[in-house]
Length: 127
Figure (cartoon, rainbow, N blue to C red):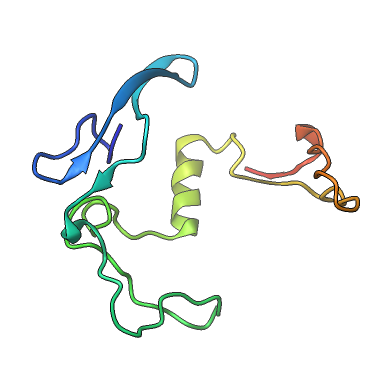
């Protein structure tokens, strides 16, 4: 589905090419064969000027940047936080893994390819 619905909004400028596929082995879903691309500038945040666009500093808060309309707008993608998303997932089914980490991560050997991942049961898992 595109933007939470099976069809793009009329006049949105979003082009799509959908085909049906099996999802999760039990249902069908329309999946775009390519990412939708909008030709409407209001569907994008206007990154103009010399503002600070990102930070890695934990003590710095940046303003939310949203498009005027579409999936990148406040209505199309309401702001949230990772803790809120985890709480919502736990309420839906708290017995499923929420996060997994490969610990210890297998060491890289020289310039060769990365080693295979550890078996799933050896990953640190949080539910």
